[in-house]
Length: 481
Image (cartoon, rainbow, N blue to C red):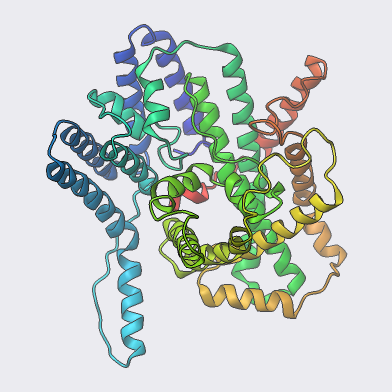
């Protein structure tokens, strides 16, 4: 069930009515209803994998209680590693088994041997990387004595499977979401309207920006050898805006939907394409994943402490693992390593935390220095996204070689007219994002200085534009992760 589908447009109003008008006086009943509709939402993708989600939830709930109720360190360690092993085992089999088998086969054949191991032909369970990381953070926090185990199964299950975040995040923490699930929630009109605005902007990002960019990005990437370097650059630009509009659009819809239900989810994007260096970019892009790896991998490895070798090692580990999390392909690993290379000069010169505040905060325009910094960071990001989008490493390398060897700044009028509409949409989109960059999302306060009818006309224009471009119903990119 896609957020940008008629099914969801019918599903959510029913949930909203049941949530606020039928079950709102009984928290246990409300949470039980929320769990049922979350499981229904997930089952609409593939009901067979619902049992995998339920098993993972039961496993982490049970092992959490076992760790909580024992004073023996060895017993606690046993339950901890059981949960970690099973969860990562499922993730490894469904997501990475074929990758490892195929990579091993290629390595062996490179030595002159021929083997024919069996691969598995099974769909990747949607959202498995996200709900697995929910469970992992929960059991790790219990093992480290940061939190107490949750004894109410329904409340814990809602934390894992809350439908707005279930299939593509954000990756929540028990310390943030569980307390909200455990307490009575009151309808807040102001927050609900804020949620509707965020949903509206998220749909605009997805339907108008991402899906239109996807059409042209796919056309250029799938036939990259037929195009000049300047056209390949445009293709990379289209994918750059596609993936941002697609994933941040999903996050906006998820956060807005949750807010309509009285629940605040973790922010996942903070205008990353206005970053002045790659460290700032990663503080603003997929924030819940970046912070997850920082807290549960980077810091336990020693973080930025220690000598240069340790810093370099930890940086490459976290970026490569982040790349591998995204997909079982060498392109994602290289994408992660490339971002590590971008990040290292900042880390080694202690400038990785130089840009913590919003760019040009309180000003309409950035300084010349900030503009140059943003442009350089953006172009480096565009280059890295080529590996993320390419079919394989060879495709990515050839794409980049053709881009630089056959580049021309000249674009004929036919090209301009072919892409003029999406160029205008992107320009409009970036202007609104820039004007709203100090808010939680671009139109959170946009137009609040106008008279109310003008502001509502702006919302109506966005809604009409979304409807005009809503026929494609493209899946969100991050469903595959």
